[in-house]
Structures are given as C-alpha cells and as structure tokens.
Amino acid sequence: QVQLVESGGGLVQAGGSLRLSCAASGNIFSINAMGWYRQAPGKQRELVATVTSGGVTNYEDSAKGRFTISRDNAKNTVYLQMTSLKPEDTAVYYCNADITTGWARRVHWGQGTQVTVSS
Image (tube, rainbow, N blue to C red):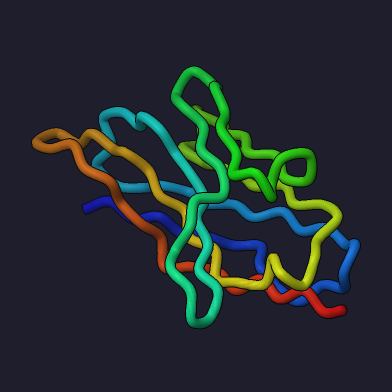
C-alpha cells in the first residue's frame, strides 16, 4: 500500500507564509510527477503546482511568483512553499503523486491539509 501524508497547514495572516510537506511511503518503485491541488468551500478542486521527477515545474497563474514547489526524491517528499498569502488562498490543500509500485502505476492522493488565511 502507498500512503501520502501531508503536513504544514494552519492559520496565517494575509501576507504570511506557510510550507506544506507531503511524504510518500509504502511499496514504491518510482515516483513520476508530484503536485499540489486545492479545494475551497463550494468550489472544484484545482491545480496549484506540479513538478516532474526531473524537476520541471508548472504553476497555476495565481501561484506564480508566490508559491514554489520542490521535491526531495531521496525522501519521496514534495513541498509547497507559499508566500504573500491571500485570503483567497484559503482551501484544503491536497498533494498527489504518480507512483509506480511493484505491480501498478497510478495517481495517489493525500488526505488534505487545511490552509486558512485571515485578512
């Protein structure tokens, strides 16, 4: 079994920073792309940022210049450094990872971590 465990969410004032982490564990052969998504109340889940196994990154427009995605392949961990946070960044943040195990390749999701930005 594969598990993704997120941490680092919380309550922060507008303009502040948070760093989210997501560690993958289990019977992992390799991890391809990893990413962060978010879902605000009453809205659909949306992409925030992704990073390939080679380190190529992609950002949703509102995250560009404020958020940085990175990964530590040795630790099977992806990070999201968020700065200049705005109230509209409030959401549950989910990580995902395209993981190959001994018998299958599929996308796995974490349980989510709440980020609340107060004005």
